[in-house]
Length: 115
Image (cartoon, rainbow, N blue to C red; front, side, top):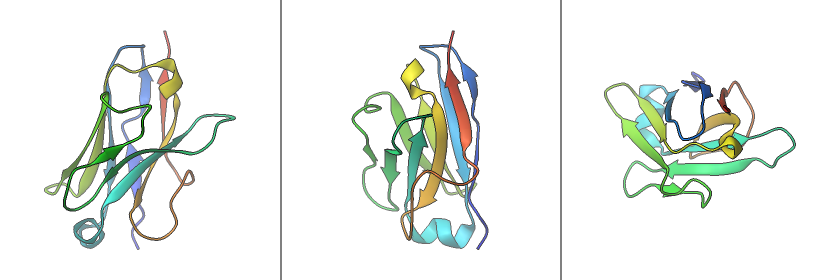
């Protein structure tokens, strides 16, 4: 299968915004929802957001109200729009299909929130 590719990470100041993207193959994108995870050094792998093919997305308590996950069918991507960023949001972010093993491994994209 074509692997997922995360992108959009970078350095942003506290209170700023950033949008991450996860590119997927068309067939897999149509079949499955996706999840975003993140992991900071010395921290546990954390589920950030879940978006299914149908229905409302779900968010972890730490990001609820600040992050928005969405599907872009034209580009076969899932986006994670992040706002009101905090230093504790600093982590490597990963995306996975809602099938098989999921967690904090792979390429990921680094998000650093710092002044």
